[in-house]
Image 1 (cartoon, one colour):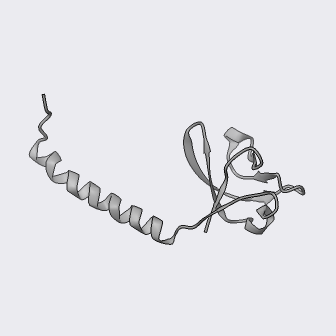
Image 2 (cartoon, rainbow, N blue to C red):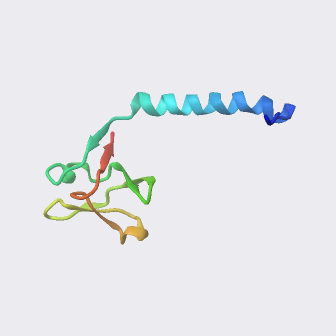
Length: 94
């Protein structure tokens, strides 16, 4: 009914959880997310952004912004290296 872990695997589990907790606590302690809009997009050139595509969260750097501010250019060939921020939830990582 229950799967028993071998001694080797059982000893590694607390270590993995401790490492994950340490990484997660460091990330949350210093991470601030700001919603990217056409009005503020040009202020964040060179900053890291976070967005979802195909149920995966991706982090990229803003390379440039269009004149209207509705499109940002990133290095992501799957999205033709550009991202329309009007139709997506894009956050800047500070």
